[in-house]
Amino acid sequence: MNYKIVRLNTAAKKEIEHSVLIIYTGGTLGMAYDDDGALVPFNFGKILEKIPNLNNLNISITVISFPEPIDSSNINLNHWVDMSYIIYENYDTYDGFVVLHGTDTMAYSASMLSYMLKGLNKPVIFTGAQLPISAMRSDARENLMTSLEIAISKANGKPIVPEVCIFFNHLLLRGNRAKKVQSVHFDAFESENYPPLAESGIVIDYNYASIRPYEEGKKLRCLNKLDNSVMVLKLFPGITAQVIEHCLNMKGLKGVVLETYGSGNSPSESWFIKAMEAAVDRGILILNVSQCNGGRVIQGRYQTSMDLKRVGVLSGADITTEAAVTKMMFLLANESDETEIKRKLMMPLAGEMSVLNQ
Image 1 (tube, helix red, strand yellow):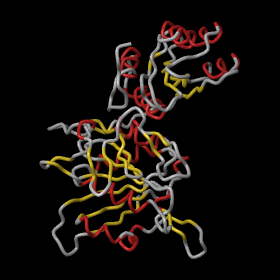
Image 2: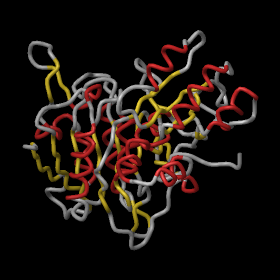
Image 3: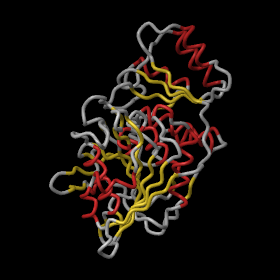
Image 4: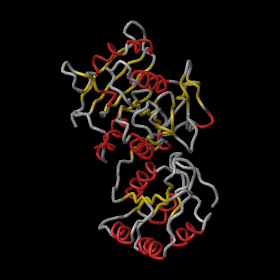
């Protein structure tokens, strides 16, 4: 891929203290209005004109842009491979990484990279904006400035946040715990089942107890094999046997993220349970996640979920749909043993879920 590369030195008159690689994939943050009022990709070579406060960070910045900005609705497996490869190839050169990404699928991308970048010990901060960087009231400047500061922040010489995160509207969230919940307000993301890793105000207040600790001696590996033979099946009142059977019998299907009600409940009609059991018997993985933003799946709490557990549907605990579907894609490609895939689906790989005895 022919990436576009821009190098900036915000410490031209001082000794450089830190370095950050920005990966621009697309999205609102990197857009600007042209003379005709149309949105066009922003020239990152002129970013210091738009955000002069960058000079205060005393860092060198390299921007690697995808050849053509991608609307995040079009993000696919190849783009995840590209993002992870760029970070892997440049890992030793930079203190941290900032990924500029459209908001619609940011939580999916952050979740997937948390699995692909095994042994990560540096910050990878996803951010974006609800308004273009050239707009008067844009949230782009604050989101980008704070993401850069987090990417270079260290304590005792070690990165404070050595994991994949999303920073948006003053909150730093674990990437595989976040989901988009707003399309018109600046607080676009939330993490109902895991506390924020930091909150920015006059200072950045880090929640050290919730941040994955730095692991001395870890070597980064980029696991870039993915398998998208999966689907998300959301239950709703009145769903028919024909719909369920059509979905579960699709050719090549290997895994299903089943969005159930509440704490993992589903219809208790015999046709539904038999369809689930038949799919499991054919080797299809079914992971039960809740449609609720907060809370967790507890299979067996109510009779309506006890049968799912009995026929071999797996509990997704408090994982988000975004983290669940990307995890399934990742494990299907990187594990060959079905028992091991099932075991890992129900345990945390990168802090994406918490597991209680159930």
